[in-house]
Image (cartoon, rainbow, N blue to C red; front, side, top):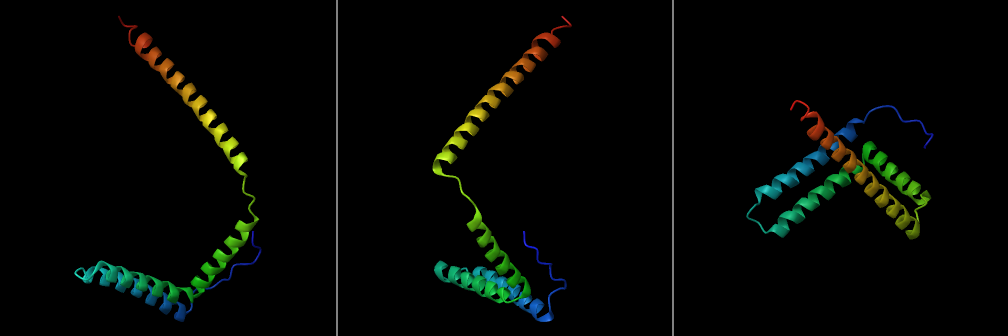
Length: 128
């Protein structure tokens, strides 16, 4: 866990303007994709991808974008610390889980069958 204190305060006016510009770029890309419906599909998709890349590039230079980049960098650092199981451990654990699921399924099926038999055979036929 990171022990740094969270920075208080909102986005500056420039950051808000950049985020608005990024949203406008996304909207313009989507609008252009549907407005030019008769254009070749490749050109429409490339225009949409260009708008998305431009929007993310603009948003990356805001305080929020820096926080996201910092979070991704820390996440990658933490992923390097993870000890992944070996293939043998994974196979054994998976086999154990499959066996437990089969046993519990059979147990629940048996309980269901017993309750169905009790209700249908004994309780509903008591009035006869």
